[in-house]
Image (cartoon, rainbow, N blue to C red; front, side, top):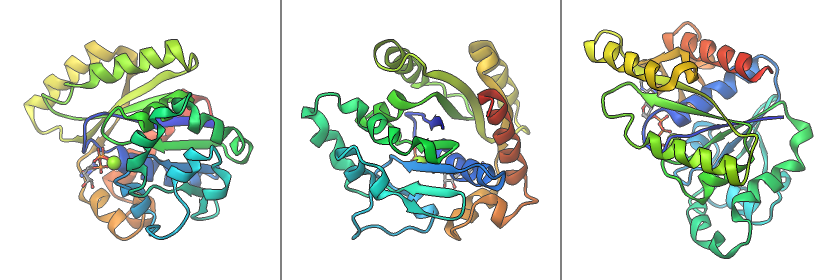
Length: 252
Ligand SMILES: Nc1ncnc2c1ncn2[C@@H]1O[C@H](COP(=O)(O)OP(=O)(O)OP(=O)(O)O)[C@@H](O)[C@H]1O
Ligand SMILES: [Mg+2]
């Protein structure tokens, strides 16, 4: 099972949108996908139409008990979800005294590893214990960047944390790629930004770009991914290209 984290400590850069649609794309290609929502905002969980306020199924308990298996929900034939709820907010405080608190997810995942081809993890816009748990168990991290002048601010902190995790906890972790989201090529700014990013990231900057597309906003409100909602849209085309590029980079 390839473990892929989508992370950026900046908010609103399309982390959740990307996990939802990549999961849909991989599932359509018949891969068995485990999706993990590690964001207490639970936007991804909502996008799958799961209401879990009063149920026992959530990532907080799964991490606390290092037992993911009991808390996984079946979404469809090829997608399972470990859902989030607001309880996850407590994790950052509650786990402070646990020795090896960055390794809870890794330990929990080892028991379900054989059941899936790909695990996709959505993270919150910060570098909390939860995000560190994701990075500590992952094979690759992908960073979505919104296309604009100030979007690089803060990414250097994330890159430093990735290096540190690699050094201290998870030597196999690699930066899988950086991809542009909410892209609009009609502006001069965009061309300049892309040139600078190419210089900075080199090969890590992916070819695929996710354009601005309203269908990507509408789909989750209808509990759909873009391939179910508008398969002909630019959003579907862009996530298909991104999905293929990830499969190629990960050699899946
Ligand atoms: N390509 C796109 N075109 C238009 N709107 C988009 C696109 N991608 C995402 N959005 C919208 O932008 C907003 C932020 O996206 P999303 O929730 O995926 O970001 P996020 O990085 O997960 O945010 P957070 O850091 O709060 O978890 C959402 O309203 C989403 O529908
Ligand atoms: Mg999100």
